[in-house]
Length: 343
Image (tube, rainbow, N blue to C red; front, side, top):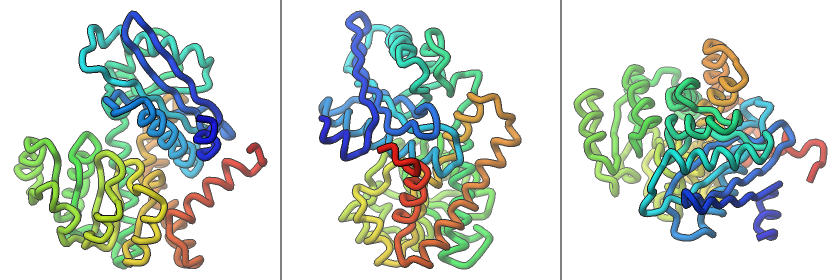
């Protein structure tokens, strides 16, 4: 376990159990150089506890990098609650988790993530103030989508040499809260949409409301397009899919889009511009962190739109160095996180 933690440069790994509610939870804290760790709480079924730990650590690391490049005084953390087949009282489970968060004394702030909702955060908030994405704080999904839109504009400008998204063909893989909000923004910009999701109802809705062209899930990578936008769970860019892609840009909302670091180099060799996921999808983090700090909506929106400027800088440095944008982004984040030689 300690070997895995050292490999990810992880500060702490916390395990929680509550017999009454059946709670089994893990909180990974990656780095607190810039401030208290902040990151969402996932509520998912995992094949094993080891898989849950690996997911928490990988995501916590991404949150550290995301917060650093977003200019936030926050560290990176992530929580996962192992979802059981039967839960007697969901509200009680999340209240128990709230007590666990409180025991960390502000070292970790939790938020909504895959499998959790603002109602779950409300339950957590009954026992700790170290939570955001509550009903009062609002849904971060629109801000994530707004930041991804700014990032797609930057990538299209850098790779295709055009400022407008009118006529740009975008394949959206995943139409969840963020994916559908992004589809709406892209449609308003005049983009041509191709969409795929496990939920065929969402696909039909995008077809009816946005004029999107439906795609089968196994056809998303091979569909000719300008931009491929992964907006579901991570790991969609792997050894097989990277060879299938017929796009100029990969820019989407999903976390951990690349199954491993080598995929960034393979995208570059294929002349596909990659927008590092933790940079382009930072809008939701900006929303939850700044809302938690009491920052106004106008300032938050401005900070989210600056994601495009950050990517402009990364793409420019990538061209100058002859390295992938992923390498450039990692280097910039690490300079901020480890500049004082803490590890």
